[in-house]
Image (cartoon, rainbow, N blue to C red; front, side, top):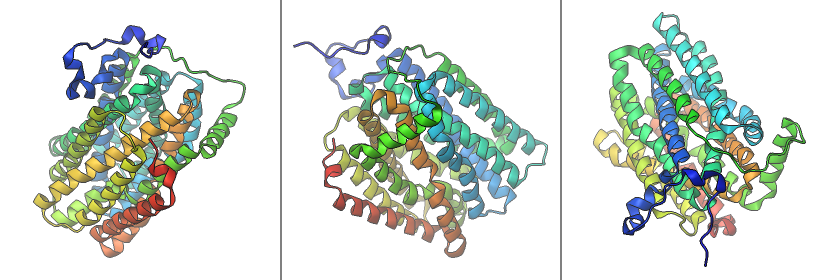
Length: 427
């Protein structure tokens, strides 16, 4: 019986593994790194997300400084960064299915570097205001909306569908590794260079991210249709997703954690100040611990490969995420918060990796850019939770607000699981 053939356009980039060592779990975990182009994509993702995670904590610290520690201000800045993803992502997805995904990624990375450099300059000369951070957040969010669909969809151009779980999990591991190193590094660099100096460092990292993706050489074999305009492509993508039952269920299930689970990402800095009274280096350590858990989760998925009943596993991860978040938000001890942060990172990263893998495997190759852009739209809706829960935090405290968020995530996950039998059985 013949073995399935790999994609012909990447055959020259594959370094085959043979012998008993290839059967080890560790070898299986790193399987898709045998593809030359995927190695560059992985490195590029690591560098890009390092810049993004450093930027998130540095921007949050700057916001707290210019707004007297306002949790609502943190959520408003998150709104300016994330909401453009909802508007720009459909267009970016259509472009990703029409044009070079590699060039779109390079353009977004260079643009992010330029705007970060501008923010650092305003901060350095002492004229930065809250509205500066808001406006630059809009541009950075728009560029991220261009970057993410192409960065995710390009993986399916490089590795076979049978390897997507491993490749996407490893790609998320690169992001999660930066959640370990990025916040901690930024927190300590803020003490040494102030926020302006860290923004300058981040701009350089974005430039390097553009260089790494430029090292990718591939010829995608997807069918590119150019008969319609971009607007028609966007509408086709939306119709395709909502007419495909498996994709429709995946996007509904991604919407629930976005609304009720990701509020903690915007509010953790405010929670840390209220509950633990820590400085920027302590905040970096907290986010680093969450990144450790996230890295463990994605590497675990990469080593397991194509697990059965992925729909049920994803539901379980979402439920555990909600329960642990509700408990964590009430803690006032750094030592006790550590295992909860690690577990939140693990469950949320497993959920995201599974969701992204299933979306790509269920979508046709020529529609993957648009389906991934719709996934980015749902994550761009994060401010729908961040703003109300941030407003609630101003009245009842950040801890109580996050507890309510976690409880709602658990309740809505259970409700979806009960009413969607086919999703529970989805592989």
